[in-house]
Length: 55
Image (cartoon, rainbow, N blue to C red; front, side, top):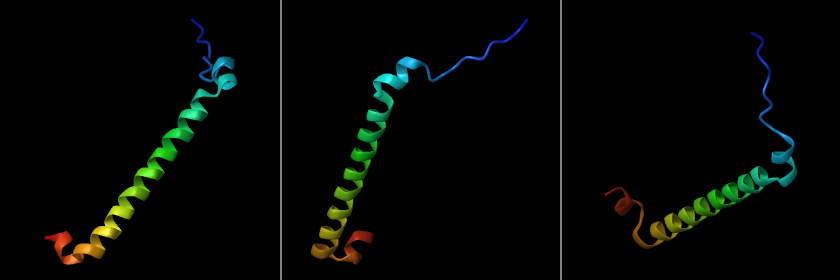
């Protein structure tokens, strides 16, 4: 019995670029979420201080 190699990246997946678009959108949303959490953390520290954050 002879095994054939199966190509995962076919012509259809490279032509429409859905994978690249999904990757760009997911990275952008991750960066946006991290920036918003960092902004919240800085404003929380300015209002309440670091001691209240840990308590």
